[in-house]
Each structure stands twice: as structure tokens, then as C-alpha cells.
Image 1 (cartoon, rainbow, N blue to C red):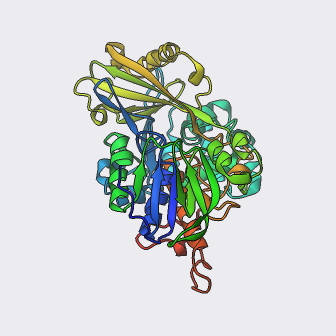
Image 2: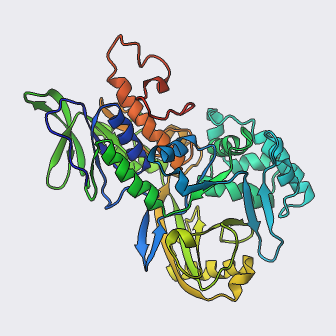
Image 3: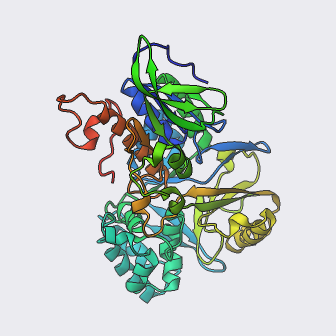
Length: 483
């Protein structure tokens, strides 16, 4: 635990509640701007849903997370921590796509400008017939013309839009859901068109290199727990883990150093006085903490925003069963699988982590039933797995992995600024314009810090009257285009 900053410093005190990527980003930004920051995390570790734990001699990630080249805020976060070298980024988008009993396919971009970079990949995509490929290419081109910020795009589902643009069930399952389910955590038939358009436009269509995939070569805990703890300590942020905040109260403070309004973060046995608060917690907690429900979103927004689960199935084989670092599947319950052998510390065999997004059914099933579905499905797409012995297998679940990105979501995602002076929100569920991803979480942390810094800018200083990014502290990466 980092030692607190000296009392009586006279600096603005900020309490950051939540030690996920959003809270960490906000804390680093505010500390860089001269704030006295304390970060409180209820778990024993930092990193939130993108961290790791130990099991049977292995280091296991809490979930399988990738990033894209277009994820500039998250990549800036890695640079800031000095851990970019512990990740890898494809020189060109290349997704192996496996089907049970079928020939492997690839979604690989060419070195051509967008959108021509995807033409050959789509027109040669094996899981679809030639007419379906041509139709899908036209739909992808049309999707690039959908404005994600248009309110009308948040009134219909991605699936309804695809149907209106000539896409049948097989094309939706084999192409659009291959990408959409993994990024939106909902199938096209449920997901809002606005966020689907954001994924496809920003990731695939605006920049030829935008969708190049990146992932961590080491356990996520190395990046999001250990490296962030070191960065926070170096920035002078006081970090307290296993510290559950029970409430946020408003009060007044009197003394030689301060006098006036303050906030108190209420824990089990103490309360911590601060001048400003960043609530980087799940939506239900954020709405509960806001005194008088002081969010700009409608009352009951957190319940209406909902949650969509992710289930991961972890499998250890006695031998190598695939040469792919990761692969996606069509016509299989596997969805996406990742080779985590080296990253986990496994010395023998191969360890695959299977990520099941939009797992509303599997999240309530017995682990044995989930495994009974996934293990034969792996063998169906990996011939070498049929002769291999499964040494161990287990299931991890995250019931509230993301918000439910359904139509109407945009109106329920509150901005960083609240109706309570000195209190801001951060989290991938806030109004970033992005789906619930690591990129969205980091962007939200920047937005929360900027909201507090702008509020404290002295009148007439000339700062704070221009674009939002103009008030970021020196040395802090700034992202333009945050919705």
C-alpha cells in the first residue's frame, strides 16, 4: 500500500473510488495535475475485470482481452506504464477462422487503403457462398456510412439493419456476429446499431490498420495490477486495496488549512475527507452513491442499462493442439480461443482459454455442462485435440462483464460530469461513444479527470473555454472525438 501524502498540504484532495482501468487513469491524470489523490479499491488487487489470479501453479487472466491499433487511449495507457513491450500488435489484421469439418479460413487485410484493404478477405471468405460474400461486402460498405452518433442509429438493432441490407442468418452468424459478439457482448439481433457502427467504422473502415489485433504476452495482472501500482506510487497516489466504500456523504470542514464544503468517503470503520470524488465503480454503485441521484441520466438508469455476462472455459492439454496464438470459429460454440500457455507460466502441454461472450445461457449452467459443450467443440475444430488428454479444465464467469448494448443505451450512459459539484463518473459504461472495452474505460478516466480540472480552472484564465482536451495536464495523453 502506498503511503498517504502529507497532511495539510493545501492541495485539492481527490478520492477515486474504484481501481479498474478507468479509476487508475483518472488518478494518474489528476496526480499529474497536482492533485492529492487517494484511490480506494474493494478488491485485493488493481485492474478490475482485466487482471489475473493464481490457480494450480498458473497465472490465469480473469478474462480474455484484446485491443486494436485504433485503441489509441489504451495504447497510450500502456506506453505511460512502460509495458508496451509486454504486448504484441499484428502488423496486419489476420484472424484464423475455423469451422467443424471445414477448411480453415482467414480474415486478413491487404496493404491497400480503406475500404479496399478488406475486399479480398470478404470476397474470398470461405464460410459464405459467393453471392453471400458479394452481398456482405455491400453491407459492410453501407455500414461505413452509418453515423454512430446519430440518435436514429440507437433506435434499431444491428440485426434489423443487416436484414434490411440483405443479410441472411448465415452471413450474420459467420461474419457480422464473429466480430460483433466479441466487441459488443451481444448478438446482432439484440445489439444497438449505433455501437455496432462504431465498432465497424472505427475498427475496420476508417483506417486500414485500425483493426490490427493486439494482446498481452504476459498475464494481465503484470500490466494492470503490478505496473499500475508502480506508476501510481511514482505519481504520489495513495492506494488502498481491500477498501470498500459504503457511501459518499456531503459535509463541511473547518480548520487552519481548509474551510468549506467537502465530501466524505465512508468505509466500514472510518471516513475519508476529500474535496472531489471520482466514482469509477459499476453502474448500480455509482447511481447509489450519487446523493439525490445526481446524474444527468434518467432515474433508474443503472438498472435499465443492465448487464451482459462473459464466461471463460480454460483447458489444459498434455500436448500442443494448435499453432494459432488465437482463433475464431464459425458454426461452433467456442467463439474465440486464445493460447495462454506461455503467458500463464505453463511448462508443458498447451493451455487454451475459450471466451464465450453474450453468455446469458452458460453463465447459469453448471461448470460440467459448459465443459461438456466446449471440450468436444474444441476437438471438432482442432484435429490434434482429439488425441490429446485434457489435464485440467475449469470455468470462470463474469455476470456483469459489460452493460447491455441494446437500442436506447445512449440515453442511459451518463457523462463524466454529474449534477453534484466536485463529483464525476468514470467507467466503460459512461458516455464515451465506445462499447464497454478497455479503450472505453481509459477514455472515461481521461474524461473524468478533465471534467474536474476544467471545473477548477480560474475564471478569466482562458483555459476551459475551448475544446475539452485543452485542459488536460501536461504529459497526459489526450483523445479527441470522445462522445
